[in-house]
Length: 254
Image (cartoon, rainbow, N blue to C red):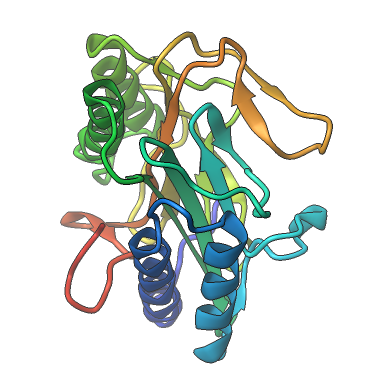
């Protein structure tokens, strides 16, 4: 069942979202050559815990990190470790924070130092595809209206959207109904209603869309070895349209 949040729940989700966005911004600020993914993960964990919250991903279904840190061909669910970032890497960081009974969830892909024009364009198209999608996040529209807009924009730019993983509802649980794919036919799926809270998260490959999960059971890479990027915010459907909940205090979406 899709949860429609009350005004009290929405305010709690705003607080969780704000903290999550701040954690994402902190992680992004650390992306530079020589920094290990574990160092970023540790900083995210300490930051979230210092605000009386807990990292949503830590031990979620056994995940060992507080953030998913995915480099280059890793699409999602990269496990933090001793890998040190190099000039030219692109680094996708997905974070969640559980505060006062509610989750925030957001992600972004960051350039490490100077990256190739192709990598920079992939990052920008992925980010913009999110905004193209949520233009359709209006009451009375359907979930797949968002999905179709994301897919159209990504494919018009010569990239592909991942099929095996999708966005989702978010709230008391990290993953709630409905699923929010980044592909599909417009006019399908549940109708959008005020009070719905969704994690909309385009996952975009520079090459073809197939992915594979490595032996650790988490790390998901492009099957063809091409670069991948990820961008996500938690949004609220309101009578006036979408409100971004994963926004920092100064109004930045990253």
